[in-house]
Amino acid sequence: MEANITTNKLSARFSDSIIETHSHRGDETLVVRKQDIQDICQFLRDDTELLYNFMMDLTAVDYLGQEPRFEVVYHLYSLAFNRRIRIKTRVSESDCSVDSIVSLWPSANWFEREVYDLYGITFKGHPELRRILLYEDFQGHPLRKDYPIKKRQPLIGPNC
Amino acid sequence: MGMMRFGIPKRETVPAVNPTSPDDDTRLLGGSIILTKLEAINNWGRKYSFFQYPFVTACCGMEFMSVAGPKYDLDRFGAALPRFSPRQADLLMVVGTISHKQAPILVKVYNQMAEPKWVFAFGVCAVSGGFYDNYATVQGIDTLIPVDVYVPGCPPRPEMVIDGLIRLQQMVVEGKWSDFPKGASPVTNIE
Image (cartoon, rainbow over all chains, first blue to last red; front, side, top):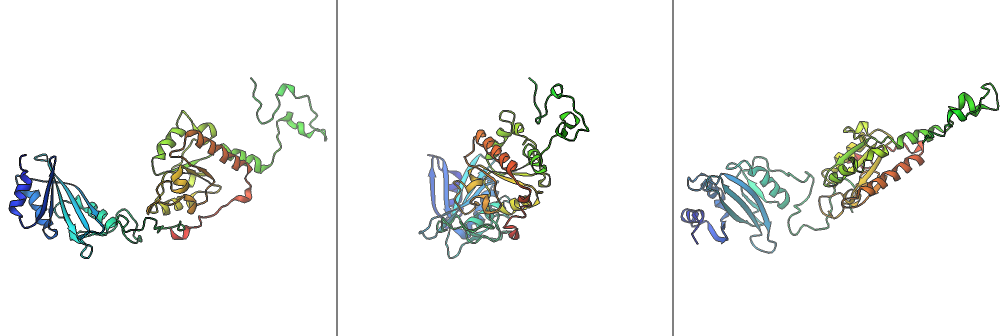
């Protein structure tokens, strides 16, 4: 199978940053070091052979029991070349933060707020990092695997 | 087929009366006067003129449109006219899942409605939270505001909604003026 241009270019330029790569039926995935996420995203967006100008999705996964515990997942799309790439970066619970990419794609703003709201991962450099789905007084982050499934913290009304 | 309205006999069957006769007063003015209790006739009017506020938050809304539309037609029961201001409504239709973030809004809308007012929990999410047994969902709107009719189902069949409405009409008929005002929701203070 023809090697993927995105993976090749990233591997050449950020050889130290890439922890692992994965390819399945044309879906390219790269796991990269957390401290380089902003540089890698900027390269993917601005390189004239890549032009990943569309930040489609940003989410996170909680692998409770593993270290690092969290994975932040970026899905990018190049409108110019009709290519997609998935970038993952691992975030530990003790240093639960990653650089914001809002400066690169403004659409990342609400995605990062959602991840912060539901997983408690903070994004350094985000212009307005506060809860987006839940209310301000909510305690904890309910999509974490150790959030008690029966826990109730209603804004109003009795516990039940 | 001649329709009897309100127990008024047909005019031609009414015998001539002496309007000055003291023992013939039920036939006064040709039998065109009915005697009833003010409470009863008031309730009768309310029963057939619900002004509903559709508080529609989720997929039950589609089912609500079905039951309100021409095929099942809530207008047959006098509950056709939705009012999009709670000030003008007396029936709060809570149609769909209520999240904790939505809860203060529901309480505010309830408190804004004028008395007398009734609440209709439409669908299992409004009744009990349904299968949304999670961090985000209010486990039944009766934790927030008093509810008169519970119609479960995911979504409820139109027949169930109509049955619920008829039961609500029965409650209105049997209602007492002393039942109102019900006052603000018991959880108003956290608004």
